Image (cartoon, rainbow, N blue to C red; front, side, top):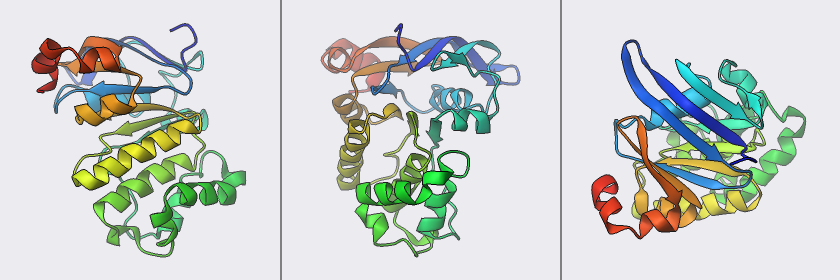
Length: 237
């Protein structure tokens, strides 16, 4: 995509002598929802960590808004507006909901912290009711909302969501994917990295299937959703 917000080319990355990503290409356009789908151990979290600067690629390029970021520190990548909400929520359990949210604007958007907090709480009214509550006492679904809300505090241009539905009840999963569409309606691009195939393909415009460190398929969400052979081979459907 010529006008990609995020463009990845020929990316290789791994741990020591073990190569996990074996030459992946990916693009996310402005305001787009793109899903990366695959089972455990296919390289999804490695991809996220490499994009956000936590890991370094051995080969390949990562460009954000046309600028090479593959050698930048995570803090510099955050300041550019590329925000990663990691798997497992990673909230600060002994801090309040409000304190957790405010930490999201530490590197970016600090002057607009109060207005951004009001905006996040309007998206997640359940958090508004619990601003003074210790984050560790929230339910799993509420903690996931808090993790996403903290990411939104940094005014992301691209938000990477790593397994956001993991461990949530079916009802909360439905609510989460509705919220994802609400966030995207504000013009924020999302890279949705998930095992939840059905609902990810319902909200995404395009999707990539990751298997053993390679994208074995990419295309529109409808093409992937409606191909029975591909669903059996790669998605377990």
